[in-house]
Length: 484
Ligand code: ADP
Ligand code: GLC
Image (cartoon, rainbow, N blue to C red; front, side, top):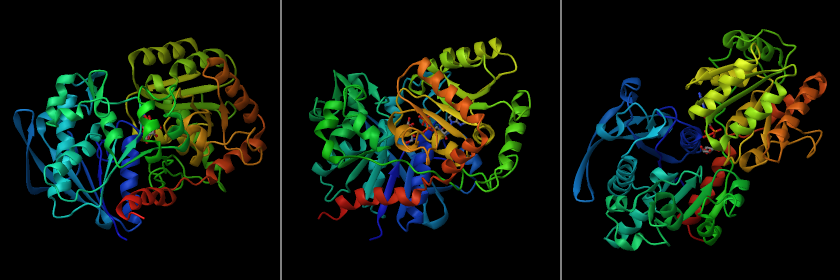
């Protein structure tokens, strides 16, 4: 059966992105369309999108939706992509025409509750009133997590047969928690402001509302699905997740190999593949030149591309590098986020001149160049729902060094797990010392070119393509659309 799927997200690649959420939703939409499904996406019209996509067309449709006692007005734009895929953009200049998506200069916008509650209401309005009736509404993270509750409420207000909802949790650490007063903006009855619903210790918790009311809950790796039902990883919501465990499933993200590949990639200095690995060396030497490191293939080059946030294990990385950079190695980082972590990397660069290159800000091309040019990729996350960069590293033949958590554990195979099929290096304990030990293993591997090559080839052959992943989502949608 061809399904009509409405995806809603606050970020969608290539229109907007702060992290993997955008990559995932953009790729899922494409993959569903490729699999023959009828897919539409809805997302905010952020600054610059109209200019970058001149084919955007205004839709003859206006939102006028209640927010507490006010009526808020917005407009709608659409863009038609290949395979019938349509993207809707909600246009409200005050809310969305800003320099950032959620924040500026590391400070969250004060009206984020209003911005995204309004966006969630627009999603529900589209789902209800578009002539195209979705069979399922699939929402992502806290920004759209109120959609299931809003739909449920509209059912009791006369929406005959509303579509089932699926919530994907990309990161349980971000829940959209706001002061209790923000609940009024939802215009939901007080019965939704209870501990079984959106209330969390007297505050409004958008993600909790989604967990309580979505028909299905998915998260982005099987291990993370198990982890979040424990107190250690549950961020206060483990109890509710345990209650809804029969509706919770972990599906590992796929990779958009049309974007992230080494053979046809405009960002790379030279194409390469598992059977023609020589080109990888050219990428390494060019990357070293680009970021100002001594140009040599004889020294192993480690890299990181990351949001600089606590989740990503930056503290243990700085500790491990301070110890290991005394040996023969180089390190390059591309990141943006917490100023204290930027300072940490800058200090490291000062301490080890000629060994460390730092680049702060957001740079898509450099992200590809680092993935291609490095020998090893460091991802020592404290927790990681899925993680995409280790998946990109695998395809780029850049050996990932990861902490065994969440999607990192599900996607990388260590020597001790399977010596013949190993694709990377894993460590468990969340300490600088453990990571330093893993880096030491990488240095040993670097000095055994034959073994390194086996590992690289194993890595490059791993297949995380969306064709497989999308089937799992379809199974979830079908369960609800066609009750057995
Ligand atoms: P998360 O979503 O938790 O940040 P993921 O590994 O799932 O982590 O996805 C991160 C995505 O963001 C990847 O596509 C990565 O290349 C990209 N990214 C992160 N920081 C930067 C940056 N400073 N410049 C360019 N791309 C970045
Ligand atoms: C979140 C998670 C990351 C995941 C991404 C896409 O940002 O932190 O682990 O890969 O979402 O699902």
